[in-house]
Length: 231
Image 1 (cartoon, helix red, strand yellow):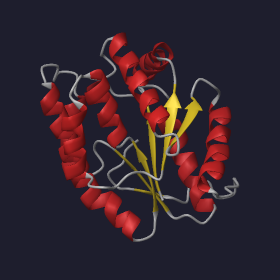
Image 2 (cartoon, one colour; image 1 turned 90 degrees about the vertical axis):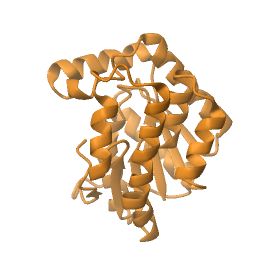
Image 3 (tube, rainbow, N blue to C red; image 1 turned 45 degrees about the horizontal axis):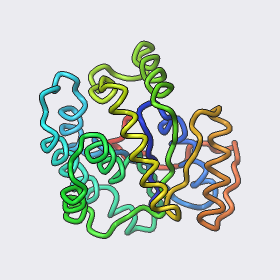
Image 4 (cartoon, rainbow, N blue to C red; image 1 turned 60 degrees about the vertical axis):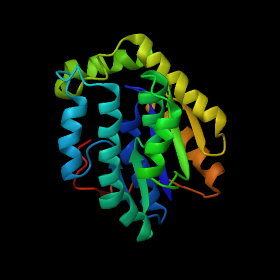
């Protein structure tokens, strides 16, 4: 299975990522956790460029193609080998993030983004995409707190510094994708408590994928974190 997690900044994806991967492993699904951008050596160099707030003069097209380059390496080095060996891959962001951040929010044409996707990802699409839906005001307040607490790095805060309207367009773009592909998207209310969010994920996955995930607390972290993943 290929499962992706999507959402605006501060929506809580990372909070749920490890617990979800652990649950899958406990239920007999060997799982690799990964992320975009930056889960390969080449990708980490690209991530530094993409998320550094000092790079505020980056053009929209440059941003799009850097994400495409990171994804090409990520698929080749991490995702495709893991899926080919029968593992479940849980990925923090994938092509939907590009569609909404560089498309809906930046204004790059869908036609161009689709061309990049077709070249880089070909026909690969997630089996399930979990969308953590949250109002941007709450999400940005969470990220500001995380930056102040040191839970997030200021060196990777370029998107957090975008205007509120940018993040509203991102959310609107995600919801439009989810409405257009209801069979693929599982929309979760990310404004609830972490426990409520996780329970909604498990219930939704069981229904959508026709599986029966049951959580055990005896061995909570048995999944494989890809070496390039640092969060």
